[in-house]
Image (tube, rainbow, N blue to C red; front, side, top):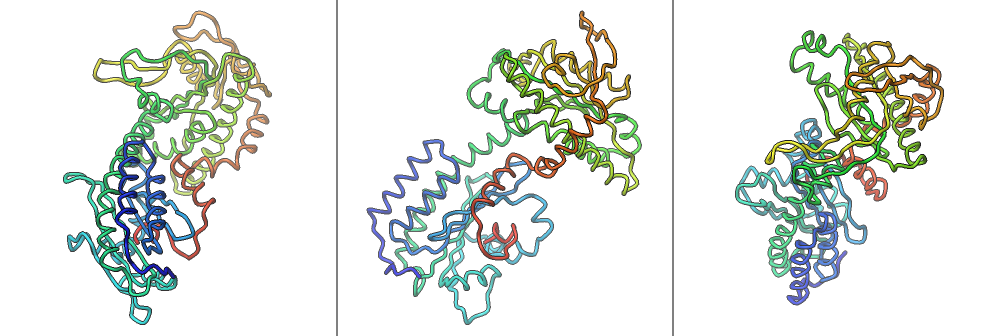
Length: 449
């Protein structure tokens, strides 16, 4: 239990406030800000046992990002996915935060008495930790903003929070909101650029490549994939069911190509193009080609699992075609002066698109150019020579021997589950593996405290 007598040093509080202001201008992450803030409050002598802060986020996967700090145990980071709240709405309805929102309150304080019934479920856990006082708060990040910060302060000090500690927390809460707003807005911009442009292109735009014509020529292993019989599926399933089918298809086949050096640059109708950038020497070209082919194995395994599930539901299987190539591409901005897209262009892109279309002609789901096979290695068979539309020289087209494709599928089957995670989820997984917090709490429990 904290032994602080509740006296607060204004000098130390000023130092915490100054640190928050400096941090808000230094492009620090939200985690760095929250971690540093909580540790500095504790160092200043505030009798905090636990601090919880959650921030609403504009993100395709997550509604909110939460941070829970325990004295002497560090910080835990969790993300609340959209569907989690829908599956367990009762937990939210029984939370102090719902009480705040439904009563239009900025703060709610409750003394925690082990002998009294708990008003909110979170108090049962806090009682086990020796908590004596709890304050929840809500802080919008702007008058018209849909994004905001909610949080709670908990102490185990005998007698609970003193008035001067409460005054200090209210004062610093405003400084924290300013620093958090800057970090959240920066994260929102990064989330949106990464979601719609891809991680690499998003970083390029954020770093200043925003003018028409900005870009460079890079060498890369190229992947073009496409759904088969999409028109028939769209007509048979109807609009909403087909959208779900298309998203399921992309989840299954495209995810592996957005890992291990691969970058999905754009989705075109029911297909996509991905690149594995590499240097111009043989070794990096071999590495990029092998990673691309390993992703083919993972994608094939995921598609088999998807089609098995569709069969159980009485739905038609989804066919696909993948073309593989190596070449130089132009990577940058094109379009109107005030409406641009960031993607890859050039003859190699056209060539891999034409190669992919040959999967229909030859009846194989995966085909590759001779250039790709020379770098990738493995057991391939020649299908023939083709004159690709718009390309002068003939292309030797190959496909992986059935046994070779089966081997790469088996080799990468273990990546099926892992590859199902987004970049954000991989970050969350790292936090979860790094910091184990005791207690049988679910994800919503952690976010609504």
